[in-house]
Image (cartoon, rainbow, N blue to C red; front, side, top):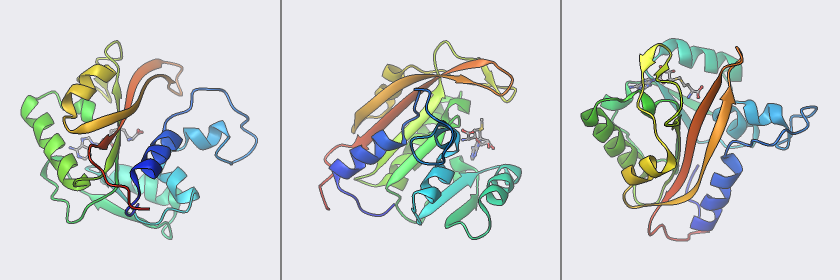
Length: 193
Ligand SMILES: C[S@@+](CC[C@H](N)C(=O)[O-])C[C@H]1O[C@@H](n2cnc3c(N)ncnc32)[C@H](O)[C@@H]1O
């Protein structure tokens, strides 16, 4: 996603937030629940975005996503440990679902936030989702830190929160996992078309 105005950024953030209302699943339009259940990168590709990157420390996770989307998908696949990644360019939007909550060490959290800020520069936007404070204590067998929106907001000095919400995510096995979602833009972002 290239340069976009603050107004457009807020619109995009709203549009990308998880939808909780049960919607007709008979189509693949952006009004369908199957559409909303898809990973964000799938939805962005479907919407015609072409400047996309997916980063994961797991080559298996990347391979699954790459196979799902196909080799022609306009996505840069970055096989990196986020905590040692050095972004070579800026991105307009940072999206993290269920990664930040693995960082139970304060130094790692600080590193993550520094890298996130470097990646966004002065005018980016972010969406982060973690397990909520009453969510599971472990994810993929690993301990996690859990957050409510106010906890996440405290970590986002210099950002303006656009939206936050709680999602009662139901796993394929029927387990309910409460998530906290937060969307924010960098304060002082200038309108630019
Ligand atoms: C629970 S999964 C979430 C995957 C996806 N975001 C979703 O919402 O379904 C967590 C992912 O974070 C990745 N991950 C964990 N720590 C990471 C790190 N330090 N750098 C990059 N990826 C990491 C894991 O490999 C895994 O694919």
